Image (cartoon, rainbow, N blue to C red; front, side):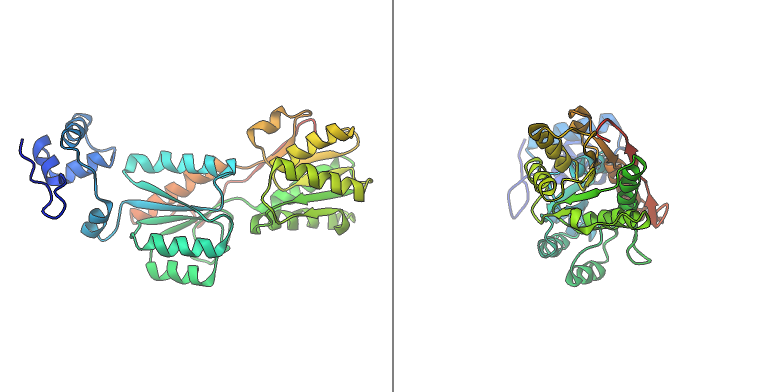
Amino acid sequence: MSRTGSRTTGRPTLAEVSRLSGVSPITASRALRGVATVAPELVEKVLAAAASLGYIANPAARALASARSHSVVVLIPSLSNQLFIDTLEAIHEVMRPRGLEVLIGNYHYDVDEEENLIRNYLAYQPCGMLLTGFDRTDASRQLLSAGRVPCVHMMELGGDAEAVSVGFSQQQAGYAAARHLIERGRRHLGFIAAQLDPRVMQRAQGFRQALLEAGLQAPELEQLASQPSSIGLGGELFSRLMAQAPQVDGIFFCNDDLAQGAVLQALRQGIEVPQQVAMVGFNDLPASAYMVPPLTSIRTPRAAVGRAAAQALLAMLDGKRAAAQQQDLGFELVVRESS
């Protein structure tokens, strides 16, 4: 078969795929994007035609033709955190049947880097964006407002009156961790945190509020580090806190990896958990249930947040209102032997 291809590139075109498979260009496009409403037998014909021609879709041309792309941008602060991996998997599960491509931007907890990503991705005319939290530069807010791209905010609740958000109360989670330790009879409570992004500090605020109400507030029992959270750092901060304040009998860690490092370091130092020090983590990462002792943690709905945020964005793209401006998916205190 003779291949004429595009006049400018010589590459196979969607029109050729359409002709070879015997379907309309719209059906061919939908089949190639994985839209679930296309009949399986037609999808098979289109994919076979595309494969035989060596056709590769041109996202830029698609965006120009429709005045917007079929891409959804997801901006997250870390790809090394299991929390966001689970969220991304759930987003893909929702977007894939609609034939939407998911573009991922990692801004490493740097709002200026996020601003650059927003500016660059808006040039591709995404049909929607999923953003993490509400902490960003004024320039980023102006770009999002001017771009008029539907946005859903994940992991936090709040923002302005028009913002659609899916998440849970970080502050209430911190409060719940403190209350659990207090109810266990602990009176010298420490707080160990890293990264110190806005969500971490919201947890800190809730933790401190519970201590204040109980008359147990002790700022000197906190260890705050700006470096990324890790198991190694958790061990270091735990050792530092215990050296400075050996009376500490309960600790809330802003992330499970910090708590996991502390459990291991306590074992090395001969500090009994929970007899001497009770520990509570955050996020309930998979390894936490297998620590010695198993780690008590705040379980966060990371996959559910991704799924609900993606569904809310799809509703907006369909011209509907999200089910709620704020979807509070809650959290769960999973009590194990460390407390």
